[in-house]
Image (cartoon, rainbow, N blue to C red):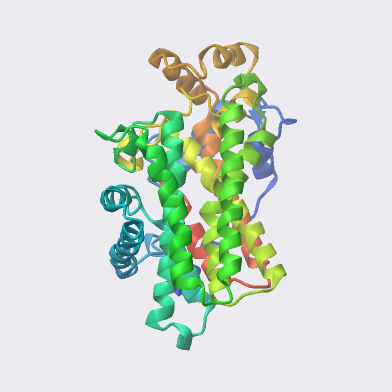
Length: 414
């Protein structure tokens, strides 16, 4: 499968002068302004042609220029094997809870774990396992070692659950992963905050139980603590920016939020813990890995922002609220860069408001500013750029390991 992914990767695109003009038009730099014509053609016509080329309706995003065979990176067997370990995780953690004479708490904790942790696509957890398998020699792929990688994967999924459970409470969200948010479930309420804390701290119980005999134990502890702190810093930036006027949003702030809130724990953590488990100690290998995966994280979050506005909730599993929540999103930042004075005033008047009419007006303005077309171009060019950077790495993680996850997130619709 991994060879297939490499074989079917599209060749690096060669940009001519008109391509460069388009890149300048879509730049998210605060210093670049929109233009009325591109390559001598009216902007509206160029955008229309771009949409036709990509054949991506606003809410479907169905064009996949990378063959499906190359985009599927997780087999059913891999997913099934990963899920098969989860009952062991629940057993270990409920037994640990009972040891403190907390039987009722253990039952409730098991319920919270089962409702929140194994939901979703589990990409972060399975990525941990796949990365580990690509890093070690075949003779080291013993059942015991694979199970250790799977436990690490579930630790990442638990950290993800802690973050999103807390985030849903702060945003007062209603749905997540196609089901009611935990804090909205009957008889849960703000107990969800304590449940999230239990899930986070249970990570360290699992690490002590299964990894304390290994040389990588302390690096794993330090990495989980570091990533948790970085991510909560990013969450703080996200919340603080949500209190600002959309007129004050900048791409610099957006990048800081994305790197810290999303990229580190979504991409760097799975790669880095797999490297630790595989015995990697070379700082340069970790540095090159971090550079690549943070680019992936930015790419991933821009996709997420687009899907929050234009995605299909039946596919994404959640109803987007970035506009209502006054989030410093990629769409909002680029809109303010593109907008004329009248359009900026519409954003100031409507963005961050819960009135459905004002939310719809912002979405209409995004379309007027051709942001769906801009996003399609951004996605394609970011994919090619990251692929080039992957091919230039020389130490540590094999190229195919990066490429398989890049192919999976390219043109995703959920």
